[in-house]
Image 1 (tube, rainbow, N blue to C red):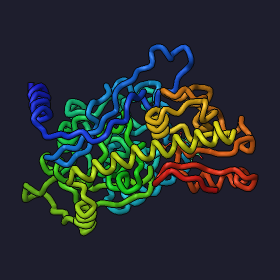
Image 2: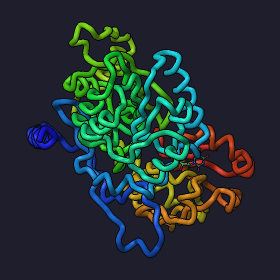
Image 3: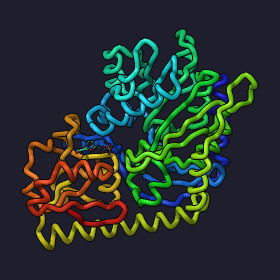
Image 4: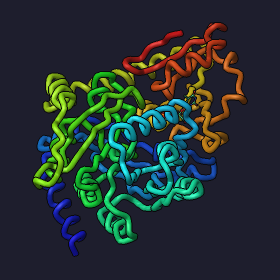
Length: 417
Ligand code: TMP
C-alpha cells in the first residue's frame, strides 16, 4: 500500500513538473543490443528526446525505455574487460576503505564484480538485475540480489538479516534509475546512521562543455549535474558533502552523500568546499538556464552535419576506407542520429567477445574482433570509444605510422593523428 502510494505521488509529480524539451536525437534502438540479421525485423526503436526540468534542474530522457529491455541476461557491457576501469575501481575501493573503513558494503549495479572483488565477501553484497553478471559475482562468493533497486528490495535485504550498510556504492548505475525519489528513499532506508552513499555518473557539465551528446542513450535516464542531485537528494533527506571530478567515461562526478543531520545522534559531516565549487562552476556555465540547453542543441545539430559531411567526402569523393574503434553505447547514439551505416563505416572493432560477430544496434555495422582486421588496410578510424582516445592512440601507433588518421566528434568533428 505504502509503495503504491509512493508510485502514485511520483506519477502526479511527473505530470505537474515543469519539463521542457530541448533535444531530439531521433529514432534510436537499445544502445547495447547487438544483434543478428534474423533479429532486424523485431528490433525495438524509440524516440530519444531530452528534457530539462525547470524545478529540479534535472536533465532526463523525455520517454524512458522499459528497464527490462535494457538490463537483462543478454547485457554485454563487462566492466572487467576494460583494463583502465578495473584499475579505476581498485583505486576507488582502496580510497573508500582507507577513508571510511566500512564494516558493511553494498554495491548497486555490481556488473561483473570489478568493484566488489576488492572487498572481503563476508560483509559485501551486490545488487545486479542482469542475471548473467549476478551469477558471476555469486560464483565469486558475493551474495548478489538479481533485481532492480527499489524500496521493496531494500526491505527484502533487511528482512534477510542484513544490518544497515556503512558504504553504499554505485558506478554508472544511479543515472539508469528512472524514479530517483524511489531510488534515494531505498538508499536512505538501508544506509547506516553514519554511513556514506557514494556514486559516480557522467557529468552534465562535462557533456555540455564537450558537446558529447552521445552520453545520451536509453540507459542514461538522466545526465546529472551536482545542482540537480543536490536538490533531489535534499528532498529525500540526504545531502552531498563532497564531489570529486573524474576523467572516466568522458568526465564523471563522484558524489558523497550522507543522511541530512536531522537527528542529533547522527555525526555531522561538514559539507566540503568541493560541493560549493562544483555548484558555482555549474551556475556560472548556465546550467540553471534553458537557453544553455537550446545552444547545446544547436551545437549537436552542427556536429551531426559536420560529421556526415566529412565521412561522405572521405568515403564517396576521396574513396577512403573508414573503420570504427569501440562499439560503444555512445556510438549507437551517433550512428543512429547521423544515419551512418556500413556504406560509410565498414566495420567496428571491439575487445568485448559478446559483441564480436554481431551487428551494431540500428546501424547494423558489423562488429569484429580487433585481431581479425589489419588496421593498416584502412585510412581513417572513427573513435567510438573517444573517452579512451589516449589508450587507443597509444595501442594503435603502427596505424598512425602507416599514415592512418583518427576521426572524433568530441569536442568537435576533427581528424588527427
Ligand atoms: P565505454 O566507453 O562504455 O567504457 O565502452 C568502451 C568500449 O570500447 C568497450 O566495448 C570496449 C571497447 N574498447 C575497444 O574496443 N578497444 C579499446 O582499446 C578500448 C579501451 C575499449
